[in-house]
Image (tube, rainbow, N blue to C red; front, side, top):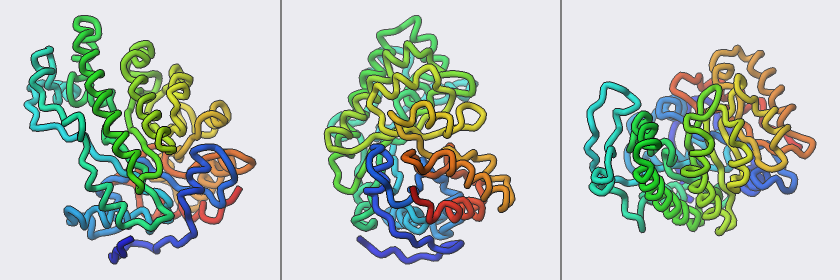
Length: 351
């Protein structure tokens, strides 16, 4: 462990933590000593509001401060994801934002693309640096930045391109997702083998307010087999696997559970509040996060404390497993003081 000295805005949260307690939550086994914290992502702006030095830090120093951001907030895990290392890609121009990342329209494009090396698709150095900084009782929850569905739509085929290809060129769709399956699986095998990583994760936004972007049958054909591989890679090393996915996934929750996913992140009160998800599925998959981002951002202290207590009471205790955090992420516009209130309200909570 390397000591990281820096100035922070707000007090450093000191509490006795151990990743083993978070493991109990993810596995739904045993009695955790305290309520763990978990966030899928914190924006650069939010992190800099807590640690001003992060606004300018580069290279190794950035990752040292990155770890300190979570350690100083009382976390027993450090969420960390890195993109697959593609070569330089030539994008096809488009007037539509959803198609601005398109680089594959044909099998010729697929063959020419500078795909990552299948044997080494991910740069592991950031994980190694963070692993050197954190104490033994803290672990990384690591994964690939951007999931296979997001890669297919935002980076490769485009939303409209994928939609047309599903009907007009299914061989191309199969080739793209097949390649992604190999890359993501190999990346997760490498991550799962690292001692500093206690669990793996994947963010992949599959839906919107009323349903999934892609028909469930096509998710089952192209996307969910990749999730099953990622869960298998983690489980082979005795580690849990977490999925972050936004949107109304009601039609596919049973599919996600069948993939072997241990915990689900990203909840919105207007779709399925985290406490309702827990009531229905919490004995088979752990819900984590779920505090409404808008409520966290705009509430006064008294209201925010009452809201946080209410969610804690619904999701924690009496043998229920959960980890406290926002329903999505810590954004640039999230007031730091409000998030510190949320954490303060949850410190000391036990089963």
